Length: 80
Image 1 (cartoon, rainbow, N blue to C red):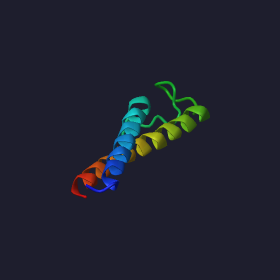
Image 2: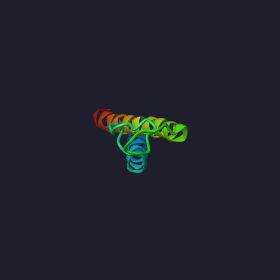
Image 3: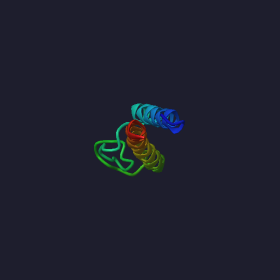
Image 4: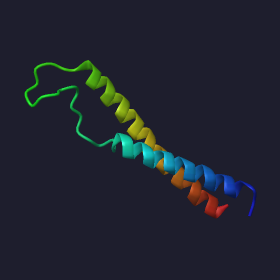
């Protein structure tokens, strides 16, 4: 066992935890976009809702990628 294995496991666990917490708070990135429409009948777009939806989508994708990279680090640490 080399000294990099514990670090790979630790980084993997931290990335996975950050990703899971991010997905818990911001939702999975595959939800239906509303593009700012706040009512069933769309009168006009809400620019703040559009901006927040973009931010939530970016954080969701980052969280999903963090989970995948964290898992890859842990799997790689088992083979080193």
